[in-house]
Length: 458
Image 1 (cartoon, rainbow, N blue to C red):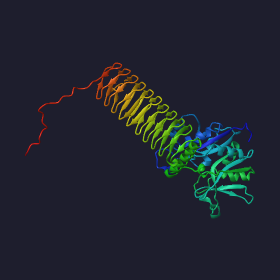
Image 2 (image 1 turned 90 degrees about the vertical axis):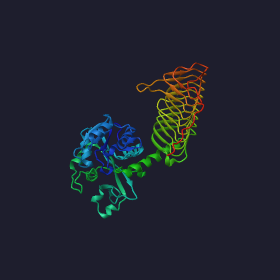
Image 3 (image 1 turned 45 degrees about the vertical axis):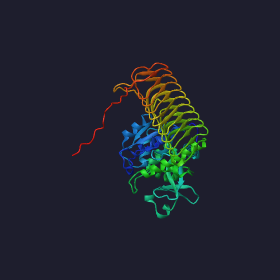
């Protein structure tokens, strides 16, 4: 193909997807962290082709809003088949361009497969992506002549018994010059079981016109599978999970049970990373060398530095975790949390929008929100920062090497000086000075002569 000929992807995304039984159109169903259509768009963007044209139809406003207005769109109304859908897009495409036909409900197609398809296309000819299936039910069959040349595609509902026995099927993904598509589609009829204009009828017209037809066979069946119902959506999720788990292992991560890892975003790993059973990753997650993730943890948009360890059932969301930190089990780090090297956060501790300096420990049953904690601080069990007055958030500051006794409430805005000690059970409402013991609790009293009430006899 001449290098100066632009290739324009056309993504057919007009269908409703009735088998999904959903108020959302099919192409907006979620697969991992993105819609089906977004997966296709990401693949296209990785090919560095011309801007794609997305053909809208059912719930066009919803689909266009999901695109963010960054793509060329065409509208198919009414929806009269795949041939009609492509015809609706051609007006937005230069006649000299090559059109690559894709589908918004085929999310697992790989960039390298599309590159191979485009490379196989003869000059001024047509290229088809095919796949051989153990059970081709429901798919259009590739019909070849005795020499092996493609002569057409027949849809299953229109196929005879000998054609139904064929196992090489049409994926629907194909490429040809825009001018060729326009000519063929002007001659396609709708005399078929569905009364629709089939894009696949163009192949027989190409053969009749003497246009060279090439095929590229995809050897990964999963790449070409459409998603039409919830079961197929779940299968696509399994395939994507396995792909991403394999990529992590190739990058050097040890996955204790790859089948259970959920990767719904992008995970970047260093060497000797270990990930236990059932971990879930969302957004953009970075795990540096030697990081260990325990069973059933959730990590979202976070970064963990060298040697950090997250124990079972912990949630790390929007946090930065320094080298050698130890978190959990059952800990929750919320957005804005920054742990310096060697900090410890233990079981049932929640931290939000707080900086914890190196070597500090918050090991049990505490809430630290909107706080700055210096190095070497020990925060006792049950400590909370009372950061919200019902209207505004206020900050708590604790100096280096302070000791906060168990069951302390720090009523912000308040500061605890370096080296200060807060007695257990205190409610601190004023600043506590450096290197001194501060207590703020009621005096303990024992009432002489008091007796426990007795139950009255009836």
